[in-house]
Amino acid sequence: MFGFKKHKRNDEELSRQYVRQVFAVGRETCPTIAEAIQTTTQGDVAFPVNDDASLEISLAILGTSLAVLKGHSQVMTADRGAEVETFCKRLIERDYDLPTDAAGKLNASLDEYQGAFQKSIANKNNPFGDITGIMLCRCLGSRAAELCLPGTGSLNPFIHQVVGDLMTLTITQTMTFWKGK
Image (spheres, rainbow, N blue to C red):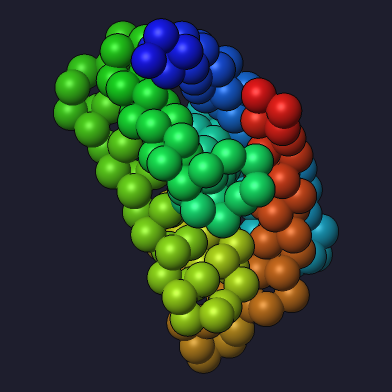
């Protein structure tokens, strides 16, 4: 019993470190995604490199990572992954001096990314594809249509794949935080 409480306290601190790391990685990844989009569109589409886009990328990374930890990873049990999720959401609510509604919106975004991951897995699709699509649409807003194939509402598969690969590598990189902990 005492070891369980110590484990929970340790997971809470590890979750705090992980959220900070993911937010830093999101900020670092934003210019890379912008460059990839600019290259793949031959300069026709500019991806924003700002705090809002960095935050959205961070939420995509964190939401997807939490979905992986809750049953699709050998790093920890699904139950422990659910506890880590609870800690991460609680930390967003209290460690970042956000108004309650703003913290709630961030946590709702985490849920949306997790839901997209779970739905893709259930449908036997690449889970990073939907996550990438959501992230691109949120960052670009109505300008996301500029990334679509002409005459369709479908993202250009090449752009989608390039950005999806970047997100997959980034998420995999951040997940190594939990290895051995």
